Length: 443
Image 1 (cartoon, rainbow, N blue to C red):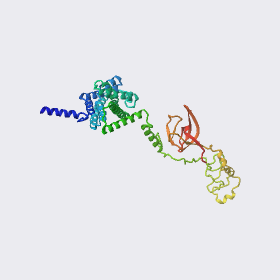
Image 2 (image 1 turned 45 degrees about the vertical axis):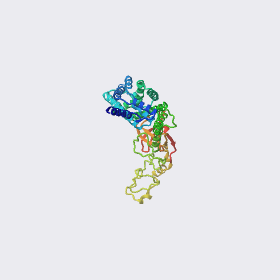
Image 3 (image 1 turned 90 degrees about the vertical axis):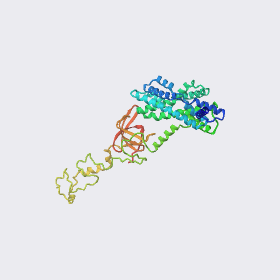
Image 4 (image 1 turned 135 degrees about the vertical axis):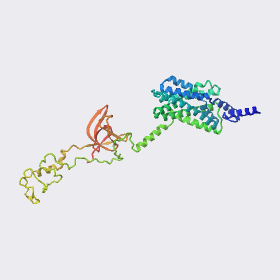
């Protein structure tokens, strides 16, 4: 009785470890046999830790032989292929069990890599290897696909030992990004974290989709509702990733996202540089330049007898405060307004003051300034630099459709033509000539 009870309990444990607790046909029996071959042992978890240590040392020492050793120590990918088999069999329970075991191996691998990187943190890591395992590579995808197909085919023929090399090659590209993540956390290169996570997920889904297809082709998959749904989801995800990598889609998801982001920044006039002043950008071109050479300019050339108090009146009216110093010696400072008839035509300033206030005075003023409208294609504005060079310090930023006064001086350097300008605030600087289009100044 005790023996029968023991055998019954062992049989129950054997069934629970498989895909189907009570297989009903030959296909389910074959799926159970495959699932038992995919159960990891305690040694697989130990080898996951050792493989992580070797991979971390390989990255920090920039040694290719250590990467080969790490690939050789990566344990058998039983839980990973078990997820693909569960999709073909339609068993969500076995999928979650395989996923948990695979994640446990990944955690041990990550801890081993982090420990090796922490010990060797004083060394200079191999950035080329970090970039290779954090960026999409067509060679890695080809190796991953071939290794996955061969590993699943050898599993069908009960050749678990002979499929070890293909299993290691497949798992290397799925596990190695974890080494880059550990190095990124410890060294502070945080920009490697997200690409490595994305790449690990992309390679994992792609390998699972290929394994599901192989299981379907070798008739190891069921045709139940659960298996069809799980298999189609995995195949569609893998197909989208493959089409994205081979540029077979009519549009790229990543490029579309970047384009939408760029268009949004352009719509809100968010420039790629940081303006140094606090001026607010004007969206329209309603700016009207005000020339400084107006008719109110004070005479400075020949009007030496005229006192500085004479401004824009055509006929001077002497008052009590006017003290002529030229030839009017008989006039006393206490002259009242009744003394105006005594003013004789001998006062010469009346003849020189009139022509100075006439429009002919504009000949003495500087020439009419030329203005340019800022017009930069593909950028919201232009940077005004202190000297005619791309290395010159930025003194102001001026947005499109605003006006700059062209002072006329030009300079050429490395095939670029620079022109001197003056901003509305009066700052003098330089911009490239192709960023301006001339405009007739408004009088």
